[in-house]
Image (cartoon, rainbow, N blue to C red):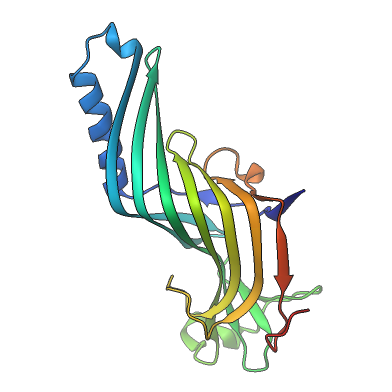
Length: 229
């Protein structure tokens, strides 16, 4: 059974400069140490510890943040017929990913910022908030975020494809105050908790085709009072 956990339109960013530099260094090292004939087939490795990747992407014009943390990693370059492929094998992985930024009104309703800068209520018949809720006068609005927390025994990050594949996964989904990515704490409001044999999502390709998939996914949903639904 495959669960499509996200089917939203995301404009994707890329890994940070440090990751890009490691990628380039490994590629350059392999090319400088091998002749043109040898470059047709070549493998290079680099061991790393304490890996952290910060990836930024956009949804409805707002920048979201994903952080990937691993205890250890092996950066592997495989080159076949002058076509290099770089895959990073990660151990004991944690991933924090913002799904959505929104605002909580004093009466408990939720509002989402639209590309035109207007706040729209989250409802079946959503309407824009009145002009009194301008960006300069939103003191009564509480910034909130939906955050997905993923733990996995192992994962692979494919640089060329911008693809992450994690195995033996535990997932949680939270509603957390603020718009900045932060560590999950036990006091936060949990919405979902589950497990999956494998989770994969791509950060490259057509925006409309972006999906996060969980294989053999089992989950529990929680209500506003924290009880299982």
